[in-house]
Amino acid sequence: MPPESMKAAIFRGERTIEVEEVPVPVPEPGYVLLEAHNCGICGSDLHSYFGRWGQPETASGHEVVGTVIECGEGVTDITVGTRACVEYASHCGQCRFCRTGRYNHCERRRAASGGTHAGFAERVVAHASALYPVPEHMSPDDAMMIEPLAVSHRAFHRSRATYQDTLLVIGSGTIGLLAVATAKAAGIGQVIACARHNCQAELAEKLGADCVIRVPDQDVNAEVRQLTKGLGASAVIETTASQAGVNDALRTAANGGTIVLVGGFHKPLEVNLGRIVGGEIYVTGSNCYGYSGTRTDFDWSAELISSGRVQAGKLITHRFPLADIGAAFETAADKTTGSVKVQVALR
Image (cartoon, rainbow, N blue to C red; front, side):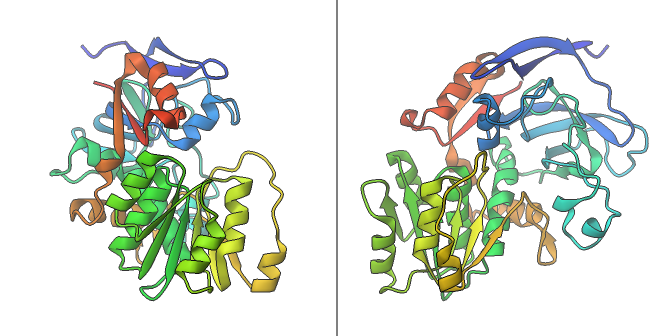
């Protein structure tokens, strides 16, 4: 008989997450139930942990890998036993956005779990449209990194950078580091990373950054101008969602360049918009993932990892069991620990 209860980690206030015994959810029509293997802590999870964003009454976590153990009514293209990772949100496949490959803007989009327990639980519910089957040869560590790499790949694609360009990545957390790796895999001429902590700078170099600017010790604009003979960066990916980061992006972008904002903004910022007008700078956002070209960002991500062109598993610096998820979040929140990607093992 399958178990009637399971362990799930649920936010219970600012900087508080507790493991509780809860009923095993039953997948509704269109959903599946997975036995979770592992789940990464994302920057968005930290926003909820600190109380900046909402805290759901169910387990959070979307960088999850698991095995399908039950399919709800109407699920015909997924079978029990399929190992899969999960996209952040579901999509209908029928609205104007889904039909044009922009399913990240689906008119019926909702969290993949549908309001039930997500990644930080022993059993995870996910909408069938959000499931991405994992290649059989791929390790659990690499499979867990498909989702965050897909975020970085989309941001890179939207930067419109080419092999002739200089790309600046501001912020060397998971998304920034994977953007560096994606750009190098694509053959971008010069990739510059900004890093605040030693562990981040070292990883940026291992992932192929041609130069790493150490903030706040070095002036980002001065360094970029020197490296580009005064021209500035052709494209900038800003991942920190901070006032300093966005202003650095505006100051360092070359005239006619592109800035992609991919961080999780949680408050208004005061920034110098005059640079956009004076430099005719194209500023855009990047929201999760969809189709980039003729393939999904998840497809690109899985291929980059499978081929070894992006060694995403290098970013996993810490591992904790579900019982120690409080320590896992504290470690992820404190970059002096050397943490980049913290993984929670669920079995």
